[in-house]
Image: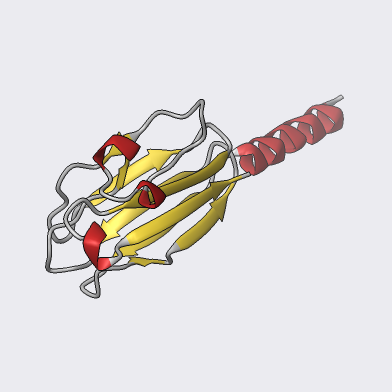
Length: 121
């Protein structure tokens, strides 16, 4: 009986560990880029953007705020997001719950090509 309980507990713990969402880190750089520029994740995963630059940046996925329509798009069921201004060393997190492709940009450096993509499977 104890062996069966121990086995069931181990299976439960392992299943919980594999079901946890993963974190993916994207750096905002002095070269006015998101690095990596594209990440592929699974539904429920979280992306963490870290501003490693000396400049202020944003992580913006809102088509209404984009100068170019190609720089911001999201799946129909997803809500737009915007980090606000991120100073050097700041971090922004977003959990993706809707599958699809998200194109995002930096409000301050969109014209310099500071864009990125998150693909959620």
